[in-house]
Length: 253
Ligand SMILES: N[C@@H](CCC(=O)N[C@@H](CS)C(=O)NCC(=O)O)C(=O)O
Image (cartoon, rainbow, N blue to C red; front, side):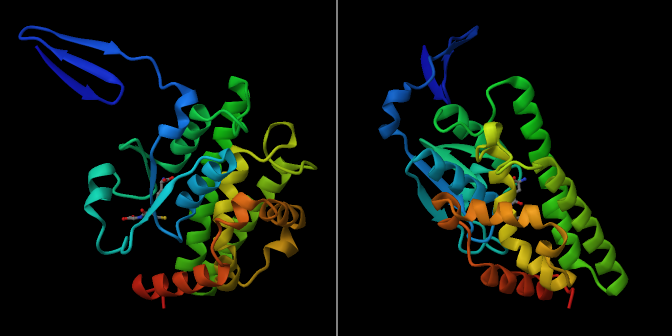
């Protein structure tokens, strides 16, 4: 009989049958033994999300930077995320977890305190809805601004982006944060990471977020008062210069 280890399943391979024994999940008191390695890129808001979440939880992790994500991905990244070949990947004791919001969910389930998602299923579904909205409308909407050519196209992309931010501002309402009981949580992490690109959107779109969405701007300042956020977000000017380089690469200018 052969024993094969794979994730938390033991495959017992006998000549004629295949039995699976599901092991009990990891002992949470054993946290110190967990090895966490983040395959990272400094300018990726998706990677920033993971760094903010782990810092909020007080969980130590190692960062392994992809030096040349655009032209020479590391063999470790290709082996860890063969489907999308993208960062972030969180290696949890060597086992890869891909897609930033899925990683956030994993982190929240593995290290309970402070919670990032609401306790009830409905609250969790709502938070995931807004995270999905942010992925589709804020990051992609921002990209539409800096990849647009000509005044009319830029103006349309800018208007759509501001509309998206207004929707988020309305959802925030009078609360300090998007999370449950006014706490910093899943949706806050998902969105604040992308704000590091806002200066680039503003410069290429010719507008100021603060003038259109003062409450959302105040929320950005509040988030930046947190160590997890201020230590993670890169300088917006550096992100802007990176976007200038991307525009040349994509033939926008
Ligand atoms: N949906 C993914 C998006 C990740 C993503 O787009 N990562 C970019 C960096 S910002 C990447 O690795 N790009 C490399 C490529 O597209 O080849 C997530 O949430 O993790």
